[in-house]
Length: 369
Image 1 (cartoon, rainbow, N blue to C red):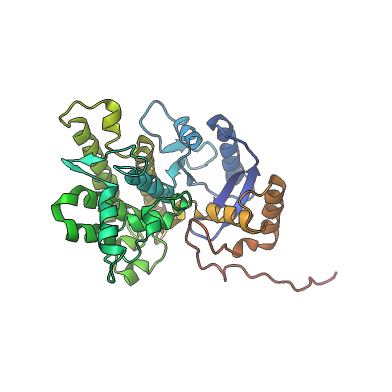
Image 2 (cartoon, rainbow, N blue to C red; image 1 turned 135 degrees about the vertical axis):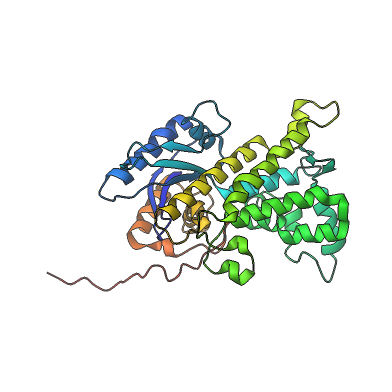
């Protein structure tokens, strides 16, 4: 099912606007569907203003972005022909999916599929460093330096590849600090890589007004000013990290083919997605703050509500991973009618939010005429 969902940035709106059964999808089919949805939202009595379009890194979605620009490295916005104030619509590659694809590239570096040999400034960025940390200091140790790290994080299964929290816990400051303390200079670039990705995810996963204060992590504070240092770090330091990485790989001395040099970095699709998301989210945050918003939570820019929607479809037909088209259409109409979206699935590849009190369903009879 191709589902187009509308979510609010400044409110709790989460509404599945349309659903289409598909075997496969191309950008040519996606283009009119998305722009028709934008037209309905912008020009109908609903009067909603579309700020961004978020999707995962599927090839059809990446091609849909490129249809709006010329032969550039990436396209992160398009003109909105239905807006009355000459606004643009930004394209965002879903940040939790980017964290998973980054972790997948990392886990295949010198390990698992062994399709990559990531390298930067004379040192390897290897999954074996994480494997050694876990087996030597975490698995059989009474006092583990990384208590959240388990065998499921290390031995990548099909189910484990789908879990965002597994990827976030691998690319965490706890793992970076433990590796740096125990192995020193041997894992310098691996530690730097993990720290960069950890801060990137923290900056773009702000979920609460008080989480940064409670966890003593300033990167989790809400955005209150267009001059926030994190916005500058994302557009300059973070993106420059990958530019310097690419330059170091291309200038590396040795008889390497172009394919081998590409394998010393993250995948091209992941790097492009990171660039698109950073430019679009920074521009969206600036637009909201300059338009009168008191604060912005960057968690609102991902597609977690859509992931929860698919969790409902699987959960409400008896934990069936492959419901039929008719079952999905029935559940979509049912959840629209009675607000069953409030019943979030307990298990899934995203964090369950505390939404129990968001909807109040009143079953009292309506007054007769």
